[in-house]
Length: 190
Image 1: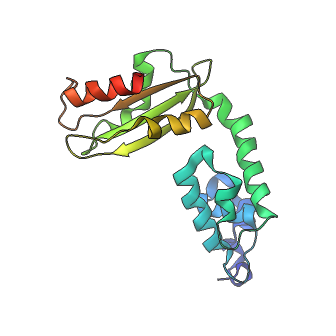
Image 2: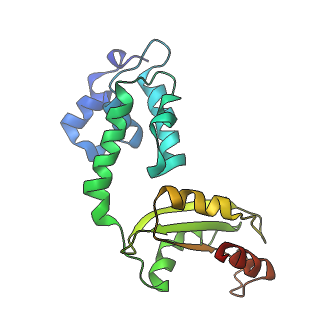
């Protein structure tokens, strides 16, 4: 559906002006930034594709990622990336927690505590121990997860992280590391 075919109160830019940005969904915010679609894809379809990439890539979203979105051209890609970078610099920087104790690391991992599969997570930190990113590296089975140093360190290098914290949950509730856990730790340390 073209934006002009929508009722005025259902158009993201008009809705933003009337109610404020906080009332818009993520999709509507992206639609407001993108503005309009093209013959191959309407703005809603483009925004869905960009939102999917944002959820997958997070702060690693790149120009080449967006260049693969059908209907997104050279004029809008820089606008999206510039908005994300400004948000990172001025809004997220202040909200980045400092992880300077095991307890603070555990706070960042609370969301995987009750998962039914093993989630292997990597926290990347800057030189002041501020959180750069939290990434799920792998999702395993009930009792194991396959982890390779390549997957753990690739994004950490891209983040220019000074340090990393890796962790995974045990769906069984056991606090004892398995032999496989010890081997993965040794391989990552090496």
